[in-house]
Amino acid sequence: MAGSDVLSQSEIDDLLSALSTGVVSAEEIKTEQRQRKIKIYDFKRPDKFSKDQIRTIYMLHENFARLINTYLSAHLRTIVHVDVASVDQLTYEEFIRSLPNPSVISIFQMRPLKGNAILEINPNIILALIDRLFGGPGLSPAKPRPLTDIEEVIVRRVINKALESMQEAWKQVFVIEPRLDAIETNPQFTQIVPPNDMVVLVTLQAKIGQAEGFISICIPYLMLEPIMSKLTTTFWVASSMAKQSSPEMMSVLQRKLEKTRIPAIVELGQVSITVQELLNLAVGDVLQLNSRTNDDLSVIIGTREKFKCKPGVSGNRTAVQITQIISQGDDNDE
Image (cartoon, rainbow, N blue to C red):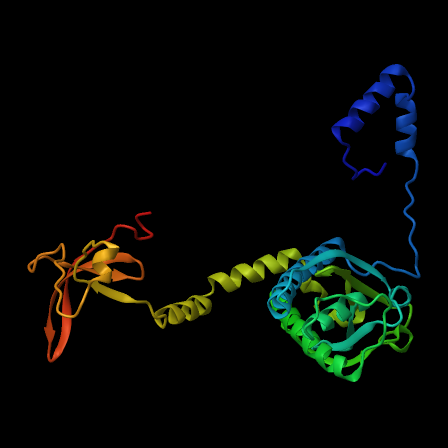
């Protein structure tokens, strides 16, 4: 047991029980603690990404999954679920061997980062997506097949939209401009880095209607190496807080709020009538309101009464003069 391991309460109880019954002696525990601990390390598969970096990549692609989920649900008009299943680091050769043949393998750039990355979509998912876009119920064929030329054009549009979602998800850490280069169907013809180079593999579980499959995002370590220092939760949180509280951001939000249009209504009065009276209304009928001619009128902004006013004219236009400000319901009073 490593020194950093944390025992649960049940494990502590079992250990105390073993000590009291003599199954395990305190001397054996001390001897085990004095023994040298050896951690197996494979030089063919060096760990390039720390746990914190893996966690940050996981969180980035959780945002990506939410964005692509929203897009597909609206675009396909069916139930879609996309969730991050895992984030692992492995060699590029191991990743390629895990892909089915045929598959839909999109090779794309992440400018200004150098090199290429891969977005692979399981054939079950992509064929169900195509069936749904062409007016079908969203079923995938029993046997996977390569895409036709027309289907590839449709898939390119969907993948380009997915890359836009990736750009939106990554902007919290680093601004990238993904661009689709090519679509391949045979994994053996897709060599973006040497076989033994390390990559980070983000696996997403996708479900479109009755079809299920995986979406894989493979990003080489060499591509992410220049921004490795930014792939930490600390940097992400600091960046998010800085953007939220920066004067520039506050100024942008204020300008947008000032341009927002909201309805302003001056209510002359109210009256309650029956449905029968409403049906019998004709031109020339008079309805008696519940307000008097000298009463202040209500000014309703949005859905709340915010002011009282007096009716009048300004020049040759009908106008009102504010006589009272109603603060009830303001954020400061809630």
